[in-house]
Image 1 (cartoon, rainbow, N blue to C red):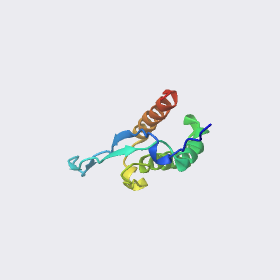
Image 2: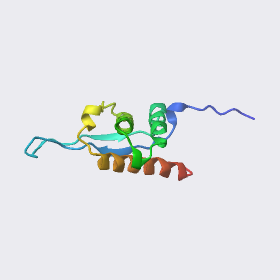
Image 3: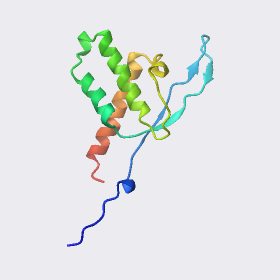
Image 4: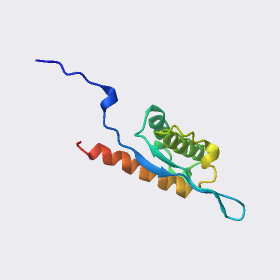
Length: 118
């Protein structure tokens, strides 16, 4: 039986298109349109950040838990094709509802790929 070579560089990749929030001034005028990025599937640091949040109870969440939520969001968004750095400062004006919806959509993306046999 012949051994077939496996080339890591030829693996089909799937990405999650994401647009960062527009930046606005105090008057609410858009000063910079949100940048579009292509987020990759989770890597080790993203899985570690997800693990940090698994045990958080929404009813008794602390400020430290909220910091973990923002760190997870930064880890997810920083793992992008263009290597666009996303910092905690970049997402500091995202409220908890926005962060939660972003992470729900990301997990739906990840789960959808797990269910896809191809």
